[in-house]
Length: 126
Image (cartoon, rainbow, N blue to C red):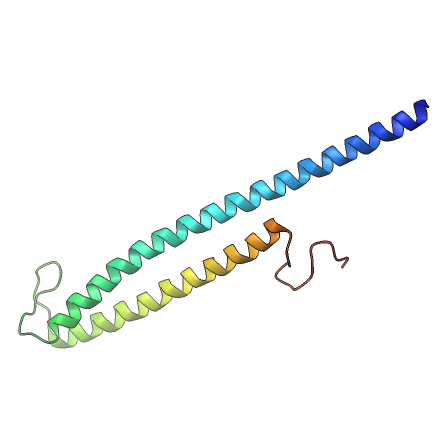
């Protein structure tokens, strides 16, 4: 009888330890997902600013006005260079956002117990 109770107690302790490990992993995943969401929000604010700058400089190339956003004179060739730089910067930031969104999807799958990014199921032995 005591042996049975001892075995049940040990099993309960193991189950509790497993549950605590799962909670710890889930908490870590949620913190990582929150951090990635904050990064994405920051990138999207920067993307909006870059788009406004692109719109401004694209408008400059169609008018005789030649002042940059700081009010300084800017040559036509510099307007084109600025537009190219802004478009490159925009592409990089959008790519970073897409990468972070992919990481969030992968972490969300882990959190929900779905497929791990390498294609294996969570409970599948290696």
